[in-house]
Image (cartoon, rainbow over all chains, first blue to last red; front, side, top):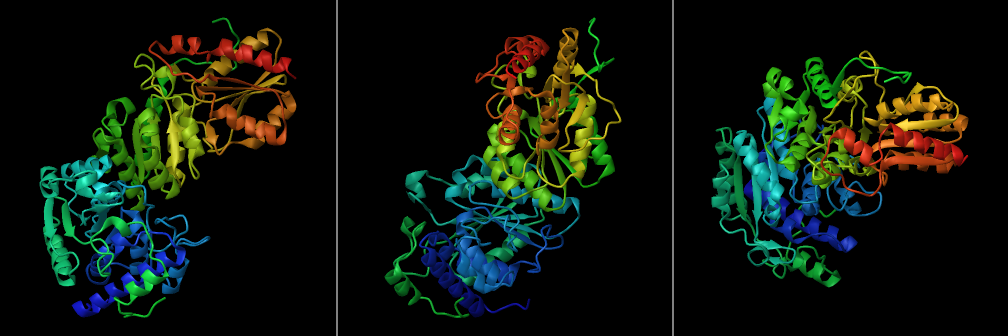
Length: 283
Length: 320
């Protein structure tokens, strides 16, 4: 895939936001807040960073692979998968409906191209990604494994089992990204269960921390992911702290946990879409 | 022992050693076989594999949830991971990880669980899981296997390496009679009729298959003809073999080192109720935790030995 300009990538991210809002609105269920905040990340990854093949093979040999541990961001992931050619964009309209491959949370059971493991019950993805990364090492496959984690998800103990293991085993072909938006379903993380100094925590566990301070600026995200790639392969796992704003792109949704798991009504959708230009054509 | 046993033994060995030896052999046969263990390599007998294939073996430390997830990931990359720990930590502790990352995701992961049941012995109830078969058989996609001795465990280990899909393989700690042949063919999902009989069928799994063999001889001395069927695969259950046998004998006993609730007996009961209602007596743990003791003492105290199978067989016959 030819490299696209920052402007082109931003247009795709805007379309992804439209897709997410229309998908959750259509079924009046789902999680719009976090995928709105991760739109730049998803697009930068799939349209610029990943060496990947939309002609999907489960084992992903010779490809960079992405895993979504915080599976409730499914609407955003499905949109970027469809927009980058894994399945027809039209299929986004089946999101969360009966007999759809686009389950509420990502699943392999229905064989949706791009999905390699189910996620939704939080805390499990990092371990899975580690296994994939180690399989690549056994096979002398030099491609990378990426994984997105929620910041609230870091409250799960299994994450820290995996963090300890990754550094001990020197899994340096893995790049984790924490969606550091400071929000979780019941409120701000600092009120619910304070994550304190995340950078120090990951460093203490033996990881290289790469801070991407403006996770909603396409240029910053691209530079940050490029830097993460440079940091990989040096004996330590790499984690990006991606500072994002939940609900970014819609003025009445940004920066609050209130849209974590609530869909917009008709009026709110119209207002939100009014702020997001239709750049690639709605599904 | 003056009993005229249909199966005999000259040697005793633990079933976990059958797993360890089968695992090593599977690793030699297929370079995609890899291993993981959560700080119990010695107990699981995984050390020989680790020594021979260090680059294909992963010590995860005391972190079972992570081990299950890594296994799922390795299987995505085309590996065949055997993840080993005690049955308690391989099931109850990591149920959600198995459910989402392995069973629902249909991953080719082999969960290898040692020290199952009361025969773990002196460590006591914290480690004596008696609910694992129930938990695992409830999971869609999961195959559940509980072999009876060293040879059968080794054969089962080799068989699951060649089978594509998630498997729960259960075995144990105590030294146990080796009474099945070393060269047996292990067919997943296929019950093995070990002894023909006509008055009652004993369906046994795991260590209690040996107790069933002893019980058959005891019953024979009293003029009762018992059929003994080795149900090494709890799921998928060989319903055809069960129905065929009970059609002939008219009643049955289930024998397992597990809670009665949710175990093999319940699976057999479901089969009989739907197709051929017949008296069934359960030999299993009756809604109780275990305790410290020797394996023999515990099987006696909790009603799981040959004497209890004999009693259950007579009760089943009386209900015909």
